[in-house]
Image (cartoon, rainbow, N blue to C red):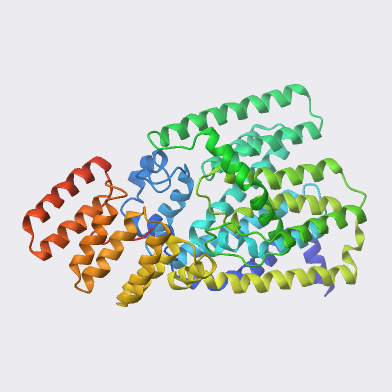
Length: 512
């Protein structure tokens, strides 16, 4: 036993890594056998096997994450991970889920190494263990596209590690390391843009000389300027929200969204795989705030500046997500902000040695078991598209997309009456979405009611005339009805619309 204790003491980092690996693979090991959820992962991976090639790296860096002008996200690093995995695993989900687990493992271990630059290793290990099993970040691990947040966290943490080392020893290697990781973070997710603010705050906190501050600010400003020009080039021609719209979105989301994420810190309950509406439990938010108030009162020996920096980290890495229109406030977006809360807690308990008392260990064990239990329950909702979309509909019955996807599930099983019901529900929620009409028309075509198929397709033209699939399906409907003249007319409209909009056509519309 003494030899084991000596080994752990002398090789504590190795012991920590192994423990993190054991906990993470114990909690998330079964996700390795999960299928695709068919929410973004089918579009980004299954539908793009021809696109994900090394010859297309230039396109990956010059297109949005979904390509073809279908989004406003400049995130090439995510697609690069899918490109590499395409050559390793093809379309087998096992490898993609394995990558998610490894990214989570290395992110948690990197966070441990970063925080131990200031705090006690044992206390940091305990907090990072709770972070590793926190239910609010399940989506970043169990849902393949959710890796973007764990990937972002990894690059941000590594950049911060190199930055701290650089401020202590201005070696060019540390300078390159923190700047390179910062660039990778920017190319992973737009929220990385707030990271230089914390570099600046750290330099002020450490009271570095003005010259060093000016050098770092100048270099970072240049990188950000280049990034904005690059992003503008990638998004050229795409609609972007006006400043007024972003301010309105931010103001609308500020209180409810922040309250939701605050509540998830200590009480991660009623998590949703697809939160179509922002549902907030203000009672749980208040309870989380009270926990912090009690900590502030009981623990008095801490650096208030560090506590404020941690709170700012939590808020400022959330705020950019509030600027988007038609926003879904996914739980896993708390992945990076939660690091700020870790910083706050560690700062407040750094001189509190009662953390090793039986009472406190029992409390930590309770949180660990509670978090782990919720994580094990929640992750199973991502095991395949049936589980995912049925749970999405259960939690968000007002979502047109969730209704349409459940309708698609029934359609694939030949249950056309049930499928019709959910597509009609999707149309009633969002009557301007031409894809829902296209899917419903295919249902009617399958049951031989071509008149209804024609009716719903013509109805969709009242809302949009820019979807080539509508004309394609109308051409098929008229063809099978024997109206060759109308079929030829719709075919010509299909070709004209397709060439004008440059959209990919499919015989059967698939809800994305």
